[in-house]
Length: 554
Image 1 (spheres, rainbow, N blue to C red):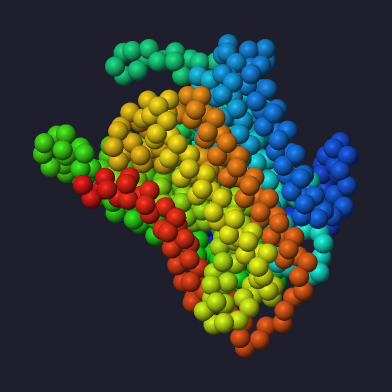
Image 2: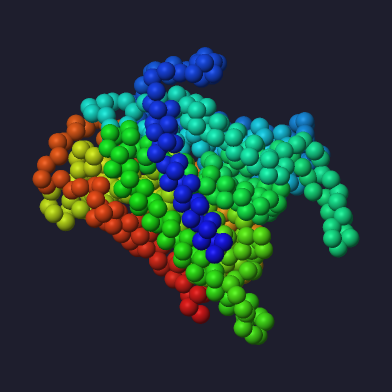
């Protein structure tokens, strides 16, 4: 019953926030006026916020900013011993520093290290937390650029990246994260600059537990769908997530902006029903994954029963916090893998084969249920274009979406965008299971070992960041390969999406006619859900059949 109550409260929070937050973000991202603090940032950076950019200029600005971010975060980790608040920790090893820099810059937040024993307070704050803000802002900027592609007519420009980046950070992410951090702090989440304290456990042993600026990082890690944990136990750690209230708040934080951005979309294109249709698609996929994960995890783990030699009563509690139990852990796992958030409160590797398969498939759906901050919306819009193209083929007329004809150039960009990430995942997974230096990192041979490798590259290329255990990813091969998958999955997709935005912005609006396929109806919602599921199934089914499917059926 507590699981149903929490799920119901979560739905009420998301519904209540949808319209106000969606409208506010539409104003914040498209307002012609700049705040005083924004004008100071523009002057410092030498930026003219009113100078519109073509899609190519927008893409170059995005890539340049992100490249500098990767470099600065890499250097910050390498020179850590010379920095204040380093806690005496050494510089991060080169391949791991590259992996972490790529991870946090791409909004992935994959961690092949234990946070509290690797990063000092300054690196956590000035490096990781800063990237939690700006990488999320980049996602919002790209999403709003694509929205302008649909809303503008005969335009060569799609906005200004620097203005969108600053507004997303200053007007949206900072205020909400600040309030959330205060609430988390009031509930017992740690916020200090203390070094590790030695405490005596209930068994009488000594344990060293570091403090740090946790509440400020926890709030933006969830709000920005980042997911990197200050502590190795991530959001299962009581210093990050002390009680059921903070757990509910943190799930709401990671879902609220991706869902509300569909309202922003409806407001900016002048048709709220378009936003409602996309929100219905996101909600259906998210709720379906929550219920499926809950149903599978409510069953005993067959591996535990086989080991014990007897039937196990109750659900699968292996790898789960007793504070949260099966329903809340399932809701968190489905939400975090549906939103490109790597935060966890339970071990995904300890889920039942089919339960683990649900969270793996969530990422394979291109993370549009509801997806990451910004990336969920632009990913879903790409799939929506594919859906109307398929509908156009069925009735034999040129497909249109929001009054824009979908032409061959657009479909080439859409097809490349859909194929890019699966190609990275499948090729790199194939290399990892045949390369001797990579195979030695797989501690669970057989179907489960393949699932762990497949999960790692799916998580990296889709910029999720969560992981199955049982795989030593802190090696030169995996740090480098997953780092490259993150960069290609993020920025390759962004360039293609911005190219699509530029193509759409140049088009003239086509008036609605009796032959126009309605994209606000339940029929379109069902078609789009079908396209998402079928595309993922056709792409990944062979790999899934060798991993979680064969493991579950056995």
